[in-house]
Image 1 (tube, helix red, strand yellow):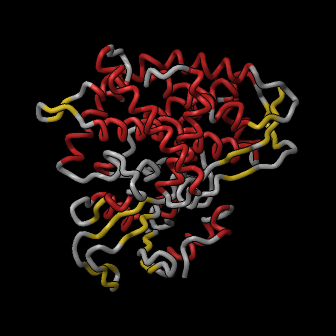
Image 2 (image 1 turned 45 degrees about the vertical axis):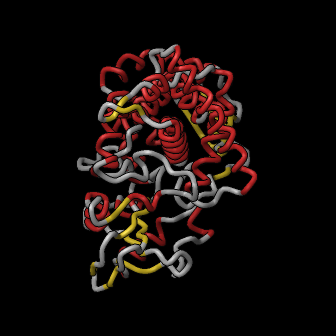
Length: 378
């Protein structure tokens, strides 16, 4: 069997269900990696950083701090970033994020087809992370271009011409280091540039890597989460009406979207020692695809897993990972998704699909939209 199949881009869940039911672990003929789809297996691997290293997430020369590090270095680096994404910090920007979402939604014309990805789900998180990093707003388009190129590189699917975008980003973040050392501000880049671990400052390479990680964590997840959320609602007018009637359900919808159609489908790990799992012998050095999106629909854990339900009582999904590598941008993504949905529902009581060519992100790892055409009615 092969894991990377063209039909998975449109509907991965039919294949996930079949693999889950019939083959708890199998080896992908294309990559040679082992594939895990059941909830308990996925959770166990994500939790066990000693036997399953995250260094498998490194794409060529583009290794990002935290994402590709294991303890003890990961533990030290994580403390630096956790200070930047505190509850206090998020509360301090919540009002501004809501105002920004309202402003962007005000630019949507009623009864007129709109590419909601280009109008809202991309520019909102890019503007937020740019401000948090102290980057001028006129670099927003560069931010998204760099982010797309970097995620493609990490997934091993970015064409060679995107490597130039990655190197442009490396050069830009490198140029900020002396600036923020000489004149630090109240922003994430300044915090990273002037941070210390065990009395020593980070190297320039580590600082650049951190900035690239912050860029991805600050926009990719939210863009895909919001696009998937709106795509689901566009096919279920009853759900949109329920949210419009009771906006307190928005957060439940965010969590159910994360479970039902995860923005990140799987992560990669490397076995650090020989082991046997479900009768299969895994050698040290073997790679493992940990498919969280499949685990999120495991019928052994979730009632009616293929149904989108706003009243789902237990929703312990793994879309933000699990254990020490839980996504640093998760609280920010939730805040931004809530602000965007509140702004849309406050102005528009109805939403429907509209004429236009919808285009999914062409990645087996990331699931979202480059273009999604909708129409809203006041």
